[in-house]
Every structure is written in C-alpha cells, then in structure tokens.
Length: 620
Image 1 (tube, rainbow, N blue to C red):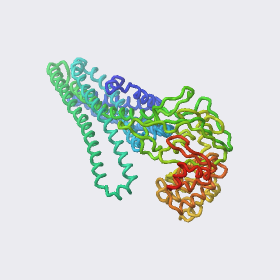
Image 2 (image 1 turned 180 degrees about the vertical axis):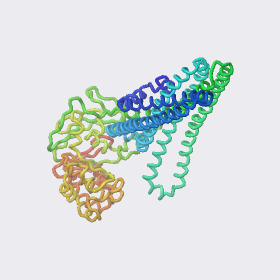
Image 3 (image 1 turned 135 degrees about the vertical axis):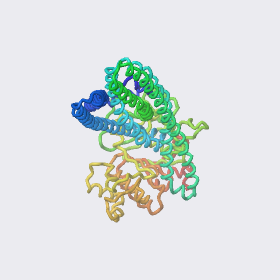
Image 4 (image 1 turned 30 degrees about the vertical axis):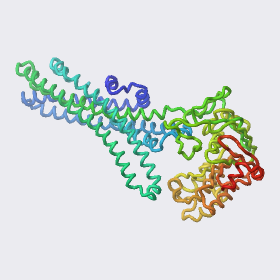
C-alpha cells in the first residue's frame, strides 16, 4: 500500500500525511474493516482454489463425494464473503463519513476564525465550493477508494499465495508482465490530478458566478442583461467541460492500456501453462485453477488505475482545503490578553495611522498588523473608497489614516463626517480590531485593544450598518442573536424600544415569522429596526452606527432615528452619516479629510468656522 501511495502522486506529502492522520484516528473501526477485508480476500482466493478439485475430482476422476463437499464449500465461502463484504463497507463508510464531517467542521471553523480581510480577499462562491464540492471529492476518495484499495491489496496477497502454491514456475513467468501494469497508474494519474485541480477551480468560479447573478437578479433584469449573462454562463460551462473531458480522456486511456497488458499476461499463461499440461508436468485442474486466480488477480490490479484517478482528484481537493485550513489569522489574542470589566468605556486614538498593506511600521510598534488586507477589493462596500488600485490590480495607495489623535469619553456621541474616501469606515473598523493599527495605539477603557481578548473587546461593541444583515430564521431568533440567553420578554422589550413591535405583531406569525434569506421578506426600514433591536438586546457600552439610515426613505428614517435614539442612550457612540442633518445633535463632530482630522467641534462651532464642514452642509 505504501508503494502504491508513493506511486499515485505523493500522498506521503504534507497534506497526504494530514489526511492519513485523520484516517488513523479511527483505527478501531479500521481494524474491524480490515478483518472483514481479510475474510473477503481469503474467500476470493479459496474460490479460485476450488477450481482445481472441481475439475480434477469431479470432471476428471468422477468422484461422487466431491459433488457434495465442493458445492457445500462454495456455499460457505460465498456466505462468509458476503457477510464480510457488508462489514467492510459499513465500517469504511462510517470512517469516511466521519472524516468528511471533520473536514467540513475544520474548514468552516478555520474560515470563521479568519479576519475580515480574508472575507474581502476571497469570493463567497469559492469558499462555498471548498466546503461543498471539494469536500465531496475527498469523501469519494476516503469512503470508496481507500476501501477498495485496502480490499484489493488483501485480495492480491491471497491470490498470490494461491498462484505460487499451485505452480511457482508458472507464477514467476506471469509476473514478468505484471510490473508493466503500473505504467498507466503513474502516467495517467499525474494527468488526472492536474486536470482535476483545474476542474475544481473552474467549479469554484462557476459557483461564484451563479451566486453573483442570482443575488443581483434585479440588476440583471432591469438592464435586460439576461442574454449577456447566459452567454457568460455558457462560456464558463464550456471551460469546465473542456477540463472535464481532458480528465475523462486520461481516465479512459488507462483502462485499455491495462487491458492490453493483462491480455499479454493471460496469453503467456495459456502458452506456457498449456505446454506444461501437455507434457504432463501439471494437471488440467491445476492449470485452470491457476488461470482463474491470475485472471482474478489482474482485476484488482486494473482497478488500481481507477482508484489512483480518484485518489489524485481527492489529493487535489485536499490541497485546496488545506490552503484555507493552514492559513493563519493575524488578528489574534496576545499571550497576556485580559477581559474588560463591564461598564461605561471610553475610546482613545493615540497618534494612530493605518494602512491596508505594504506600509512600514514604526520602531515602537511591536505588535502584528494586518498582512492580508492588501488583497481587498477597492469596490468592496466595507472598505473605504480612498483605496485605489494601480494598473497591476494588487498595489494600493496608502495610508488611509494619518496621525489620528482623538479621545471619546464614556457616553459621548461622536459623529464622523467627510467626503467619501476620507477614512470614516476605516477609523471605526479599528475599534473592534477588524484590522490592527499600523502606527500608534488604540485604547478602549484605557487598555490597548491588542492587549484585550477579542471575545471581551467585541462583546463590548455593537454595530448597525447601512446594509442590515439578517439570517434566514424567525424574527425572534434574529433579535436574540444579540444575546442567545435573552428571554422572550427581553426580546419583546428590545423590539418595542426599536419601534419594531407593532409591525412584528402585524405579521401572521408574529415573532415566529421567517425573515427569508438576508431578510428578503422585510422592507429596509423593518430590517434596520430588527438590527437595532438586536443591538439593544446585546446592551454593549460602545456603539458604532455606520450610515445606518442613508438607504431609507424619509418615513422609515424617522422611525429608525427614534429607535437609534433609544439605542444610543448612555453608550459611547460613533456615528458615520452622509446626511449631516442626522448628526447635528452629536456631542462632537469630527471631519476627516484625506485620512486626517481636519476639523472638530459641535455643529454650531463647525458652521461658524465656515470650513469644509460648512461647505458639506450647504451642499447637502
């Protein structure tokens, strides 16, 4: 088996060893499966051996006792073989399904632990493809191929014993041909693995395309781009088809080659074995028993090519899976991270500068920053539009924030204004450590955020964004997402404070109404108020409102503003708003320009300065 694994594409490599470790964790069940496989192999070898007494005793010597003994032995052999075959299939499928479950859990857990920058650099459809399509390919390898591989190895060993026991001279001659049978295993296996990797990447790209066009179906239809998207889809399926066909050709060629090599071996046995029977050196029964065993032996050897093809596909999928699993997050807890005490918290930016990637760090900053963020897309709505692509589509203009020094007292409402691209969203994204500062320090409750455990830090922060995100569940579950231990009474109280109770009770199922995918069954104002109720029930001392009302009409905005007023009470609040009329009553307003604080003060003070804030107000 080890020799075959080495031949079949370096499964002994790092990723292959990891897979074998996962398989080895289930050694008890593998042990029972192997016992069953040994029984199957012994039964197969015994059925080949039965040909000798059947021919020599019954048909040549006409022994009537053989008519009772040999059929009875055949029944027993095939009964045991059937029972053992069921056992090996059950245990190997159990192990295979367990490993696939562990792969999916491991992959999902790793993805969920990676920072926001990872989700901006990877396409959603690609990640879905890794968890579904790639893992299913590994399932085929583990559940089916490993089972067949082990079974065929034991079968080959049993048949080899019968062959050499029957006629060792003829066996040596037959095995002059056998090593050639591994030729297609090596050559075609490499091609299958290469094409399989291409197929998996093309399938991931197709998944991304489907996800985007289904999500943007309204845009497609309003611009009458159905024909255009259909053509793009056909192009992608054609590319996938070409790769699939190349893989199919490599698989199909391996079988005829092995058939021909097997035919050479059988021809040699008929010639050499027949001459020994004619000369009297061997009996007819011995020859036919030997020939049966050899033919049965060539069958599992031929199967090795097909097994190898599946193994190569599985290894390609394992490589893609471990590309994610082995990726490290740079937003992690320090070894001496602390938990923040519950209570009002202030936030302080101490000479903070921030770059998404590629910017050198100052000599005093020893803590790691965000190395993956350089792969973000400039068009992503979660990123500040001050990021601009160079022609190579990888480099960016930096930094986004420069020398920000700002202290926000507990309970203070700070509004952040400025033109698009000024760094507003980037500033607030530093507070929950979606990214780490490049220079300076950010303190919450007087403690550097990099010295606070992530669970404690984020447990103190609520965020309401421009695009409300709801999960496909009930209204009650979506509100309770802020605190899973909340009672139904607390859920209702939060909904009332968010001015959501009335429209919720107007639904036929009330709080048990399903919201649909991403809240698709609700209006924008309804979704936003449920998100506010979710933030209320979390009861975090720090609140971030990222343009929470900019996408709403005037009537919906009025209700949401009332709900936000309840949410902001007693909390340290950061408000980003395009509509400057919504931030006039903030305790303080800062205006960001090119990543710096250009102006700050109350609304009246900034208007009196007649600077950029004044101009923005006049323009709005």
